[in-house]
Image (cartoon, rainbow, N blue to C red; front, side, top):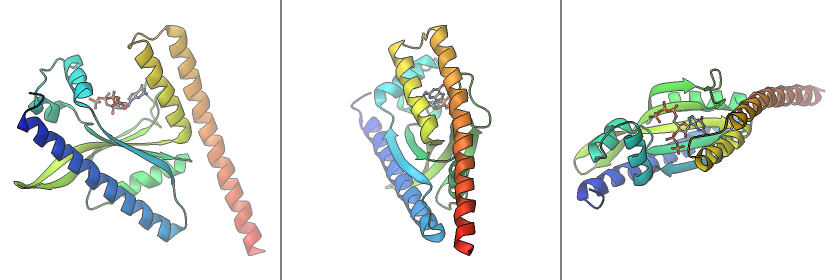
Length: 208
Ligand code: 0O2
């Protein structure tokens, strides 16, 4: 199946969806910055899930590796990660995307308010983006992850640990990571408060 036209079509569809999503998000953010003189984003990463990674995910979920099953059961073939400085920025970006006419949000998971058992923290939006191909328009599923720099630091080490131990992570490392996730949450709160205090002092000085 790997070299079939069917698979090439699927990859074309996902690549087009990624480009549409990147463009729409970039326009929304530029417009927000013009309106508010503030850019809530540190950086953005995007990726198409590899065929190998999609196949492994299908196998781990107990499904046969077919293009149909990739379309049905893999919800994050197209992925964008938006990294911001402050907790409040995460929710600003969620609101921007929810109000977009191009992107349809069909599911959201607030792992910041309700972190995963591992300690993983991030805001996930499952969305549809329209893709125009010869046969007409199709809605393609994508996942947008929005998180702070600190949460991203945690997630990237967690990803390395999971990969190193091939999923069988020793208990003491799991506990250490959970503790770090708690510390990161407290740090994000403190940084947000300091930023708000700084803003109030700056505004007062401007009035004087
Ligand atoms: P990768 O390599 O990042 O693509 P689903 O993926 O929707 O079938 P699930 O697990 O309910 O199933 O989805 P969820 O919770 O939205 O998580 C999807 C993605 O979130 C993962 O994709 C990771 O990117 C990230 N994620 C979730 N939990 C963790 C965690 O404990 N640690 C880290 N580092 N990332 C996490 P993939 O496909 O698993 O991985």
